[in-house]
Image 1 (spheres, rainbow, N blue to C red):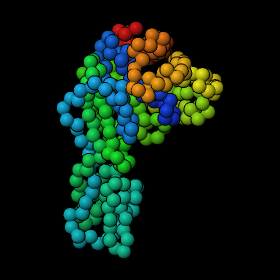
Image 2: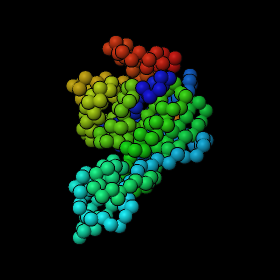
Image 3: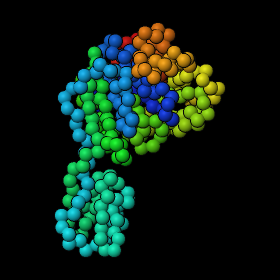
Image 4: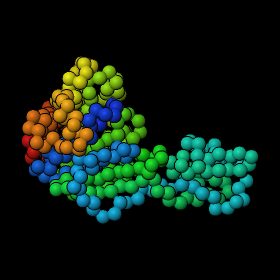
Length: 306
């Protein structure tokens, strides 16, 4: 865990559009009824948690997320092309004896600077996004937002994770990017538990398998919420059974809930859904107890709201 006081629950999905942001926001609201909670929006390419908290007040100024990129301090480059061979990202190109650095592709590893035999490369900071903090009631919202057109989402995710971990809250809910690539892996890393949100469609069924395997590769306990139950007939439950992952709850599909989501309306007045989501937290608590998980703290912290 990032700091001793926080229990970190990540909400993720194999594909986009399953409702993970909606569930993350509503879990934060439930947790906030008993104590402080930080909702970390780590879906930095398209952060939209604030859509559910339209009265959230910004705290301080956004913090720039920067990486160090190389530049040439001298025009007397011998064009040895050593740096181009070392760059794994294709950010340095040598054509006709002229070396060009594309800072949009650079990941800021610094290898070219260290290896340049002439010592003419240095680094300078380049802004790639922002990490901002907002507050509404007892919910603190940390939002990571990548610059439009940038591709270095993982650096922005890590900056937002760090900012969320420094908040003095007992709980942290992470809204993770969908999928199983590097952004999702970075967002999930360091969590105590992952809630994977799926819908009963063939695409979601296929991609959920990848998300479960990703969690297992991270040794991260996980469970599945079947959202929009009744929207399709893909057999999510059998997949979960075969992969030894519990189904935490089913949330039924309905036009009223779809309209609420489109309008950014929370489910705090929906007694049935709130009860189901509280049951999810209880289910997670029981899983820690049944497995005698050495990390007792998450279970103890969930006790207060159940």
